Length: 113
Image (tube, rainbow, N blue to C red; front, side, top):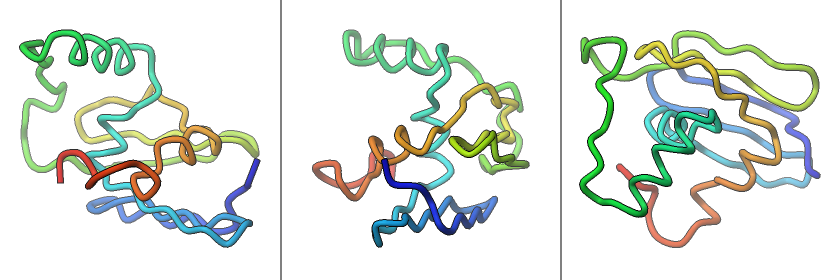
């Protein structure tokens, strides 16, 4: 598994990761929040796939201002935890998960952009 050699979080824009294999990945803040690996977010994505009329939960932030990252911390040598302005902070983005969800390796444009 490739490890990051450089991580740059712009709290109002997104996360850029440069990997040891020379690849570079960019994840917008909205994309990271939507793709959170938390159990709650995974369940919501599954519900949306089976029922396009799924009602989305209201953000804990009450919709005040744009979604941003308010804080981030490295977790050991294997992940990053990001705290979002809507209060969500339970997802651990492992390096392997970030490679898996890299928008540049998925077909089509990044969802939600």
